[in-house]
Image (tube, rainbow over all chains, first blue to last red; front, side, top):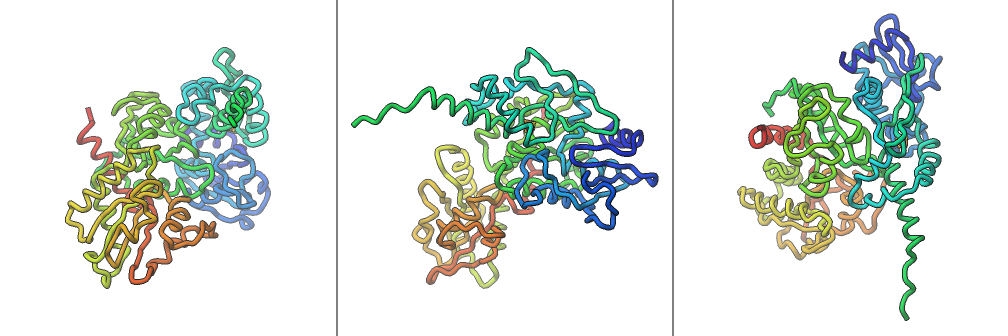
Length: 211
Length: 271
Ligand code: SF4
């Protein structure tokens, strides 16, 4: 079954799925639609009709305050719009404009073909300016989770800090499609680099200037 | 662009940015152009600093054969190290996750870039401006960081000159190394000068830094629409006239060069 068919069959079975800040529906006429969860219950005529991948990608680019959203699963997706199409393939592409690849990630994870990557493996393979990132302690890793991931991202983390203790598998609850994080993103890697560098600089203060 | 591969996917790789929302736009634009031709079963983009990331993108692709084209201006650290590492590929063709992945050369080194730069420059000026009284400067960043990008520009400059393009002179210049773009008035002696940035996307360099170095802006301004800087052509400097182009990577014809890199792969690297 291809990805669009998987999405279509999940929606046929449940008619309504929440997906991050979205709610996805399949109506009796065979139309697939998505809108912000905050707009559930509002009349379609009150919402802007975004009928293309391009329009949705543009909508998801900035938050309500006009701030750029490079992390697509950061909370704060704009509301006030609606998108609908009869084609499951087009619908999947529209969802990918908002949450790029997140449906495919779920399907691949769920089928066991896309195992989560432990944080230490991700950090350990970095090079260039990010090569220091691998030097973080477990405490720093927990800080990244608490300060970056938990408040700043809607994904559910599936990767362990190291390879010795895999996390329990995430199962899909009825009526929901999980947004999964199967590997630390560029923001987490950058934060790891900063923390490792701060710790290194603290432990190795510059030699006092020679007078 | 006669190539037809309905059973293969095209994956365009870009750098992306966590700060500049315009950085990934050329990749998406080119992907949309190519997708509309129906030459590939599907067309995808992935980024180092945006989503989908290089690590996330493969499960999105359903075709068993994938052509991967780095939308980068030159060979270097990214195309040789970061991209292969993140995609877990090596050499020209790799089997991974049940797919055959073909790793093409970056767009910026395709021979078609020469014609694209020439055409871009000629499009900037109208018939009243004689190309033979006009110099063309291809401008790059130029630091020790990526010597390959400086090399790529020099190759293009030589190729444009050798192609019989009608310009009085074609030369390279850089923001941070000699010959400096800030010296454009002494580097050239023609009444007209066209400057084309050899970058893959518009960003701070093309919106702010280069305009200041050229003298068309007095200080870096974060204008509401930064693209305004490209709409004010030409610029008069005494008896000299300057045209300043947006980054070559934003040219719609770059979509064709991406497809050309796939054809180049088949001709040269396909086992
Ligand atoms: S590491 Fe994963 S959970 Fe944390 S911010 Fe990045 S994408 Fe979100």
